Structures are given as C-alpha cells and as structure tokens.
Length: 143
Image (tube, rainbow, N blue to C red; front, side):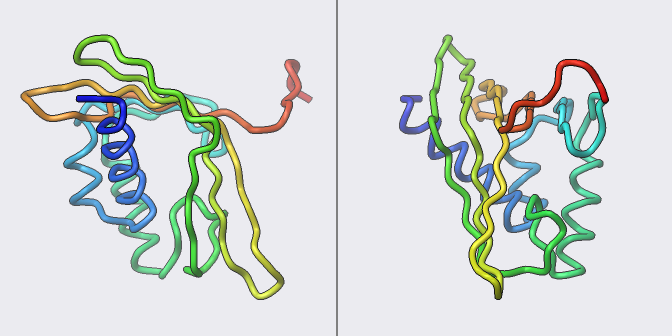
C-alpha cells in the first residue's frame, strides 16, 4: 500500500465516522481498537462499542459526530499537515483534523491533533489506535 492508498483508506475511515456509518466504521477499525479522546475522557477507551453507541445515537438525533453536538448541517473535514509514516504492514498518520460546519451565523471550525495507527490484518487495513490532543496549548499542570 502506497502512502496515497493509506491516505485514501484513512479518508474512508474518517468519512464513516462523519456519516455515522457503523458498518463502514467496523470494516475499517480493529475490534481491539484503543483510543485517547481528550474531550471525552482522560482515560483510554477500548473496543468498538463505545463509538458504535455514539454513532447510532447521533444518527438517530440527526447529529454530526465530532461537531460539538450540533444538529446535522453541511460539514466537511480536512487533514492539515498530514504526515504518513510506513513500517511494513504498519502505517502511522498524524495531522490536525479540521471539522468545518456551516451554521446560520457562519462556518465554525473545530480542530484537534490526531495520530492514527493502521495495521494490515488478514489482508485488510484496520485502524488499531487513535490518539487525540487539543490543537491549542494546554497547560501541563491541571488547573
């Protein structure tokens, strides 16, 4: 898989999340997926059920995943400063995720830094780990 193919796979995975498409999400993520999502909890999240619940709930309410709980509006994502590192059947993508949402008062953009680790398992690429951090300078000492 070339870096271009890794990027296309990553975009497919992220679009599944954006669309609340649990089937496509499960096809692109490993069952033992681990995540750190700073705005959800300061602890590691294990497995797919956590996001499946969020995605199904968001879809039922017409919400966009990751867009600060706003009702579904025209939304897009961009991968700023994307870098892909390849090591055999492992790829690491790091970038700043920009989620732009159209609102009556204008476009709002949410941003955070992400790293996603992808591994070829059984001939198919899967996201196995995600780490997110704020895209602003957070204090080293908790307030």
